[in-house]
Length: 209
View 1 (tube, one colour):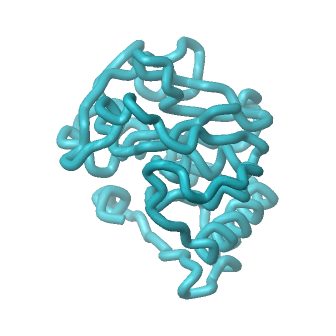
View 2 (cartoon, one colour):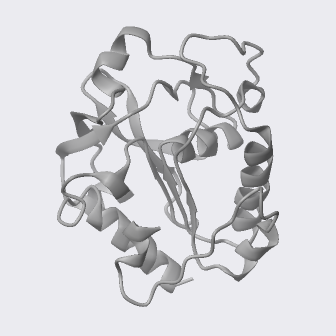
């Protein structure tokens, strides 16, 4: 919230399963799906619950955010996904997840956040927003996209091939940008094109809604 509220004139509505206020998204001009614990495997048709790295589930949150995302799609509301948010968007659009990155976690998961480079795909929304071909991001995830969801395209990858960002494959459709890192807590979030520019482009899309 602080990352968004650092821009003048922004109002943030807290949507949550606890508040049971999914309907409030209809009065919003943008939706952020934030980070958090693993999405329940049933959302990507995987029966395995006891995989390595599993840290619990919150099915009430999953169901609530599914409802909110679907309402946002119907209302053509811009969407920004962060970490778990990227993974859940992919699942809701028919994709699947790698349940645990195994040895690759030494690159992608840690506390404090790991730092690694991403390679930005040319002629994507992320490339236009950031004006970068590569850059450093923070990292704290043990899962990643496996099969890409319908209507999505990859906009960046880590050097090891891990998908680090997605967006709509049809740019004429409403704004949807999701990244595997946490732009809101990057040390250089006030200057990095992979944080500041992402936030600013999302907010501009919301203003234009």
